[in-house]
Length: 199
Image (tube, rainbow, N blue to C red; front, side, top):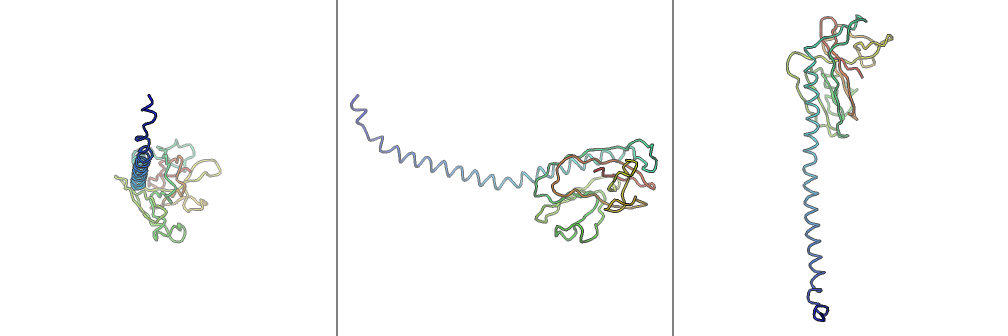
């Protein structure tokens, strides 16, 4: 028993082994952190693309449905879909049917919007812009507002003070933060079918 207590050879190597093992553990943790920083933007872009493509499929699914006539106050509601987004703060906007920032400067009001039917555009705050196309027949997007009777009707301008009249194309933009649920309804106006935003 006395030999075990007085044997200090192993006790001298324990601190050295502990330092080596802790150093190896720190190196592994640093490599994992670096790998996560490299993979995180790729995973984030995949999640954003998944949400945008799901939205495009939802919008495509209502295009063949019933389109309400906003001029008829007793017309039943048109085909609707609800888009759910929880996009990261790095997304500046999601646009439906128009390019609101053709200069990629972050200012959506300094120039006219360029119509791009059948297109969903999302832009990062660093200026990178991506497009997702909706296949099939032309999809016209228009912003809606509640009139004095509480009925959702298409708006001609962004200030929502006029109704649409024979518009060929307009667009809808959701600015950052792009998070929550957004309702779209099919309406018809002067023989043109619109996908109207109800938010």
